[in-house]
View 1 (cartoon, rainbow, N blue to C red):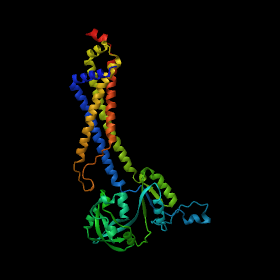
View 2: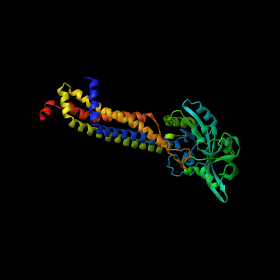
View 3: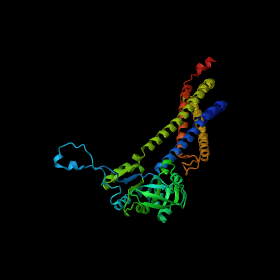
Length: 419
């Protein structure tokens, strides 16, 4: 088999029917362009939507859940040991929301090689007083440095300086929606009432906007020391320990281990946000399905064009075989034609897909719900370009294989006698 001669013949056939070749190449180019652009945009959108929740969610959350008393007093009475007790009267009055021995737990968790970092947190239910109206809200006491390092807290501050809640006493960062309800600007003082009826005045030093409007209307943030003072609790009072792992996939195992070791409740991120993972998976499957469908449609177009080319080139094929070309040589000629269309069409498609993705990436996307997002999200993952290149070659190969096989079985005697 003379490789150079086969390539020359394939190029001659491509150029002889250049319009059909161009149509086939455009089909591949369009398919690859849309495949890359669609996947880049959809996965970028997935990452943005997931980041709204997942970036602000601990991989493992250690806390104490308020529960009814599992051991009812009636069950402890010897006189009723053989009886069925259907009365459950004693509630969770003796249970505690704070984590017992929290400092020792945090020290042990920090020494765990699987842990990237942790951030303590306090949840305080309060009322924000606006004239005669009490607005229900939540103040989260946080370690601002750990929260910013592990959960990107500063990325959601749209006004003011989050560090002031650590540097200044009795200060608060309000959710953007809550600040609008209270008509509170930076430097203003808001009054809150705790669940125990205590009144406190806190100075507003910033606005926080997560992108989830309902949360921004209720949540606010203060330092751990300010929140402990607000609740009248000691310095070791912590209600949550938020743990960030080096490998998020270890979260379910680590959560079970911590729950057993520390005799507390522990929730992993997969359990807490299973609906987001499901949505991401479904959107990704849809994107791949649409992209692959486009490539298959382009493959059928190439198949039809090569079939027509074989019928139009029967004389040429017969002459080639009569002058000594084997069926294998003819097979390779048409495979080279198909792969050439796939290669150049796919290469152009990858380039145009990158350009189109870049155009989308620079289109302004301004919405009050997503203050940190300024343009449409695009994910420039090289994997998508690699998949597109492989699919363009595989699709065109199979599109050319069957016509090439048919051409290789042409009997030159029958064709010449028919002429």
